[in-house]
Length: 164
Image (tube, rainbow, N blue to C red; front, side):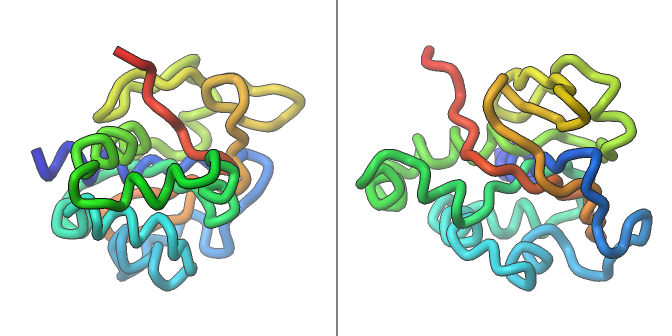
């Protein structure tokens, strides 16, 4: 279960047009350490609240579509605070898993796909005017942030899994 959650967190979606500073270079830091260093404060808080730090720090590999702090601010007022409460951990974990793909999926592969199976369900992928879009409205703003246990693609919105 932990591996699934970590994999979901590892799915950060970054536009193929934006290149990471250390493109094609593997960092010595894992996904969680990289997220902390890059100041993905809200995502890191969510991963901690969801109990996924150990999983996303594990062997992997994972691809994480990582929402920026600004992406979390786009959620309706009170949503994030509610999700971070212990009684809503299952819902938080489901959302986090929806951001993680098992395996390494670099941008050059992402742009050839029409969807990706995350640990929390299927995410649609489309390239519009040179920008990678997830589920029609989430933009990948940075791609291929290499970590010791996977890849992070930065996204501008929080992906919400489809209602069951």
